[in-house]
Length: 209
Image (cartoon, rainbow, N blue to C red; front, top):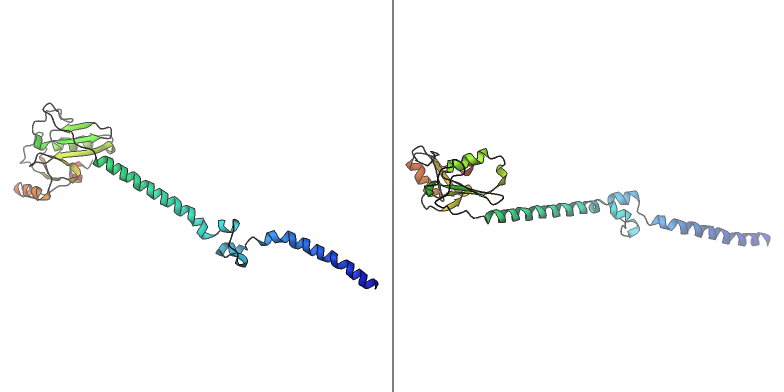
């Protein structure tokens, strides 16, 4: 009887100690194992929470992908904004009292004229395409150029300098002997090149600083 009594008294003590151990050990069981963290596998079928998510490869990549996407969108919008501003710039009409910004001569023959507009909106007019080319080459900061134009030799209309086709010949009597004329279409430029026995030139061939 004594032994049974001792055994019955010891059982609640053992059970209480076990419960306390289990109670304090339960929170630690909620965290995933190192292998689970490394492989991104939830423990005991439960989804990874907090600490587990922070160390999964997919979760670590999410912020980087979002940041790169946002950066690319900002760059694209900036380029579109700059392109719209540049395309919206219009050439300034020539007047009879205009002087060449490079050689300081009067702009007497419109078909040879050129024009440059800087980032501050100031217009620089030239009596010869060669004068504008020299002006750009001698400019301290060519990046400040917002737009440049050349006069179509046949139509006497402004065209964007980067879109024009050029012919250079010593047979051409331009105001400052630059020997350069511009055309809107390649076909017209080809005709002039054949007439003066020259080849076509592009924007970079003329204005590359």
